[in-house]
Image 1 (spheres, helix red, strand yellow):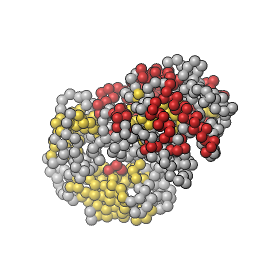
Image 2 (cartoon, rainbow, N blue to C red):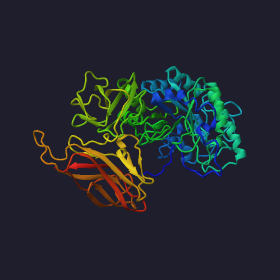
Image 3 (cartoon, rainbow, N blue to C red):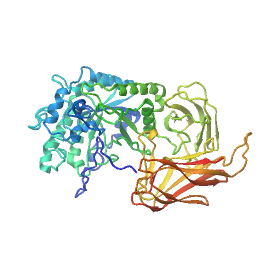
Image 4 (cartoon, rainbow, N blue to C red):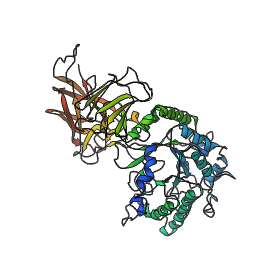
Length: 623
């Protein structure tokens, strides 16, 4: 069970129900033309898969310290450094007065961003033109550049320069799509909702002044800087969304200016709401795909979105590739953030990893760009699947994050005729056998890629998968591993919580009600021990049952585990926390015959804090 935390882009505060339904809490707020043109407008986005998010503003000189000096300032460990004004409770004009002189973009910095995005294999970019602190990277036109007597001008581009213009020209020069992030909340505007650290409620009549101001900014962004592609606004609450921002009016005006634009969903509350062109999970990957809906996960190279002197928890190339693949296998895009410093330099730790990622994509990009979500509910290896249809054929790409120890892929449920199996970027065929929906592929002795190897399967027609056969398969060593995504969940609240990327794992959580239950279906091909010569010594196998579980103090309870006519009654006790996982042997199960099995876990009693989180269930042969 993961409890809510402060996010760099989203806060779940002020979630108060409105007295009457908001007519603009609807698809595109009811603005005409958006729904009808969605498929055409979003095609490039669906195929692009990978973009660069650039958080850059007056928080960059602070870099997680206040006052903005890593030697004399106080270190703020919160890893969203773009919120430094919030963390340090800095008033205006102090915030602007101390940071503006330190914000000194180097000549050509936006060219370096665009070149890096291209080298990384990214297809589009999104720049923070105004974050929550209210300062603008573009040269906002008077009177909207001088909104109050406290800060004076909100423009922070150096004299004679406009950083948004430089950015847009640089990105287009590399053939990439251009997007603008704009914060529709504002911590300094006197007439904006949530305009100070304590975010007092501003009268609606006063707030209309800010809405006019905000509309003028966004219309300038999509008028003065050439053809653009993405509207990326941030953020709304249940109380302030839709009509609060006069969304219908704004979207209608923006469509008149640039009808090809696509918009995210943060004019409205809830990261997964359906009202824009795509929804926006933040630093988490949904556990499953969403057929018919586009989504984009925004994530970070380290922990912070803005530049931080002290945040050194960098992702590796392997982390990035696996994260990207995980998201794409579920039908989504990855918008991966970099946080340039006060001079506009992207940290080398980020840049080096992104270049490595680009090298991997040069060899394996066919398995990412223009692909669809996996047609399989479960896979028999540590990795993911993406798919692509072309000229009456389909290509299934099996991304192997770990090379199978038995050097085989054994997949159940595929109904199509197999035309060819090989390694992406490799030479020659891989031996394979398809028998009654069970496909076996023989792999080489070692993985060709240390990051992620890709097996490509060419099949006839669109993928057809028999769900009754596409269940977890017993591995070559006769072990059975069951993961959260492979579970069938019943009852209220319980759900699969998605992992950031594969090393973090996902888990079954929010098991709060005794009516909820979990079931795993799986296939056993060899119950008993195998002798030399390939014979099974007996048709009865004893398996140790392990659950990798985490339980907070005050959690736990009593459960029953059943498979066929076998049943185990157990007590679940605290492991120390919802993230303190322990792999615990909970009992033994006998498997007498090969075939499909179902293992069910039910709660008999749940303690007040909740029952348990489950990372995996394993059956390990005791012989």
